[in-house]
Amino acid sequence: MTTSDGDAADPTVGVHRALATAARQVYRHPLPMVAISVGWVLASLPLVTIGPATLGAYGAVRSVRENGRVDREAVRETLAAHWLDSVLFSGLLVVFPAIAVLYLGQYAATGDPLSGVFGAVGFYLAYHAWVVFALAFVSLADGADAVDAVTGGYRWSVENPVATVLVGIVTGTLLLASAVLTIALPLVFPALAAAFHTELVASTDDSSDGEETDATEATVSKERPIAGDGRKNDVSTTSGR
Image: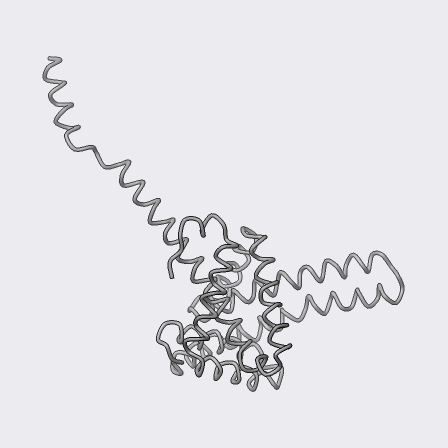
């Protein structure tokens, strides 16, 4: 998927476009997407398997995006390479919400303002971490190592704070809308959320590639001599003599 210069300048446009593209993916490939969602729900039931289940879902969505079907071999290879990283990611995702709940509970019980501040900070960190690790899961599914996946997600979130907030709001809205529809929660939401995050990372990568290409072309243009300049200079030198 390619993006225009306007998308690169305004990441919020990329967020909306990623959501629209993800919805089209679900509409065009309903059976594999439903299978991904149900598979994620079942695989996540033991709770400790949420990380690998999430990684598998992102890998499956990526294969549907590229091939129109779930490539089971590619998903197995992704899980074999990064299952431990995914467990680590899911564990870290629990830390900040736990801190927020702990301090907010203490604030509710005692009225201690410091506990309220720590709770609010923990809530913000939890929100930020969820966005960063969602993008990191996409990068893991694309074959990046754990460090590059997390640093890439964090760098994007810092460079695009408004879009980061918007990603969390959109994902939360999809969750609430699916919960209201009841059956859509296990059948649609996991695959739709994974597709949304996957499209967002893909659009960001395409924008970066486009900027690098433009910079390279500009450099080549500056270094390339204008046709006739060399001859004109030789003539001028000869005339000067």
